[in-house]
Image 1: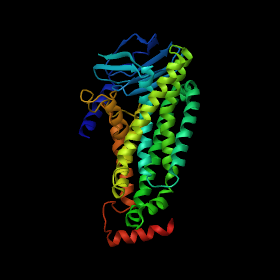
Image 2 (image 1 turned 45 degrees about the vertical axis):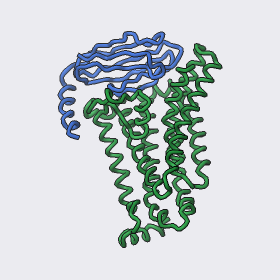
Image 3 (image 1 turned 30 degrees about the vertical axis):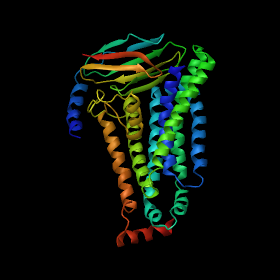
Image 4 (image 1 turned 120 degrees about the vertical axis):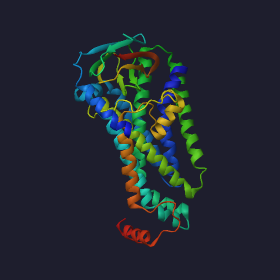
Length: 106
Length: 288
């Protein structure tokens, strides 16, 4: 619980620090994320659009980002991430776990 | 084929563990197979429908339909499991005191079965819809032979069901007088883990604040993607990097269900209820 209390001011501070850098699009194609590495600024809230250009469904998932969302074939979903602290946040396709990518917050 | 089997196994595992615990928690109850079987069948049917509307669901509510739907299912399951536990605790003294324990369990156990049946149905619905989506996807793409896919899916299903059976047979070895107390704890932790997952979906939908992106990170010790990690994720809500809001919902669920259990019943392990507890029990009985 102490960690929780300590974390609150960090989040509040971070959310007011950086302007929205605009949406970022990631495409899933031939079991690969394109781009596989996305850079976003620390402390910003960023909209990620995941577009699935495969014939099979995908599930965009990340333990560190707390995101888990099914992307039907030929469609796109949006998730907001952040405000985040600096670091690497990995994500993957839960229906094809070898398909991986990373959000780099800097 | 093996990849198909592994993914189906993973999705089936969560629902199978829940079914295994529910079966143990209803040990000795006469028509439990009807309720649990009905829950599995209804959930599987629902899973096919949900998978068919996956795209519509994702686009609903300005793009947060999937999150809200998942959270609603999880919280409904939490309510069902919690209700079962509170009901069981209220009748715990009756169960323990009865001369014919099995007979009492049958009488007392018939009532909360719909709650557990629903909880099973919701778990199967949520996990099953992903299995259906996944299998339908590879069938439609034709990238795997139909026979190989069917075999992989069946293997995954069998392995998942075996895990559920393993937890069931492990639990029913526990002597009857301790069994319901053990399954009560398991169901309480199951519910808390589900509430934490539900909170994560509402956080993803931006309907709740994170209250700390990651309170801690134990992924170097136990990854959530590993088999043990997944089993513990289902059983006790293990999360390698929990957001603050998840911990709030986890502890909140433990406190609310645990508090209600304390409020309505005598402690399960007290063989000699004191006078106050006995009086309270008498008051409770006429209302049933």
